[in-house]
Image (spheres, rainbow, N blue to C red):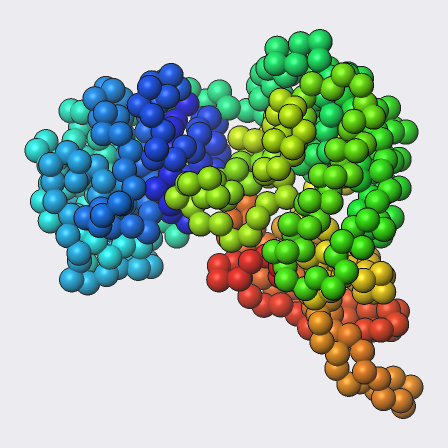
Length: 509
């Protein structure tokens, strides 16, 4: 396995994705990880990620420098390189000229990490500091017009550093560089497959649970559904799933879940109808973070009440994914910034005093889909677009009411119907409708209308960490807008969101 130290870069999860695409397991850990924990993980190599800090600033993030005495390869990327240079006796200073975006990289030593890489290639830079003096044993292996020290290595100790980001698609030969680090340098084997993950997970779940019972919050989305089927394969009917109908679901969602899990997969599922509780708690609330917290709190109350009806439960299972864990880490002191609270992370285990099982917590969404395929789930379920835990509650900007929910459900159903019919559904990460807290004047049947505005949001992405707005055909957008305006009484205008992440988020709230 490869250990990735998270110094707070927006790209750190891309590093992990690239490593796993090369069929090598990796874990992202904060710089506070103890040296003994690192030794216990026994990694074949360590990658130090980039980050927004400057190494010479007070309180800049640092990992235990003992990693350089473990006799294993280390690759520093951007800030990770600067940390390595600083701690090993070199010097990093503020650059006279910052470098962001594409740069032409000239490689002077095409061995080691640059084996098989073109002598001149493009790379993606994002830094305002530069290396002024190298530690003993290091040599420069690549440069750009603005950066004299764009890459370094100490081949004797197997330490490598890149000032640019090999993990992003803007560095076209970056994957080859990472491949060189993983295999010839670290000596890794290609053993990370979803078939091996399922086998190992089933064994780990059985060992952890023993003769105990597990309760799982089932939403009907890809994550919780895959977690449910994986757990059911491991422990059978000692798993009970609880589906909470919070009144914030898409059209016919509850019945689809009941049909799939209870009737077709023959799993133990309890259905809790709690629409009134959620809507009462959300009455008058417009702040998005308050809505998220209220929905999470009421979910815990309803789930807790339902779970208490199941006798002798020992474990709580959740479909938490790796991005949830990483993005929520800063709430507990980690380096990555929290943008909004996550529905899956925190709260339930402490409240319910159950042991926690998160069988998917080290997986990215695309890996979860592959696990679902391995477990025999249908294509429709595997490729279901992500749906937020708080549901339509955060796709209604402003107060959530029954009337506004009804409008959004109808508009959203039309959108999905058209997207699927057009063949675009699998090509999009997410596509949905947002109901705005605005009204506009329109004309219908020669009469003035003053009704709601709906926004269409469709994005492409690999992992939701970054996303681009989808360039849907104008005819398709026209068809969607026309149907929504004609078929949903109460909406007279449709707009299209053309913002990407960053700077925007995928969900509006």
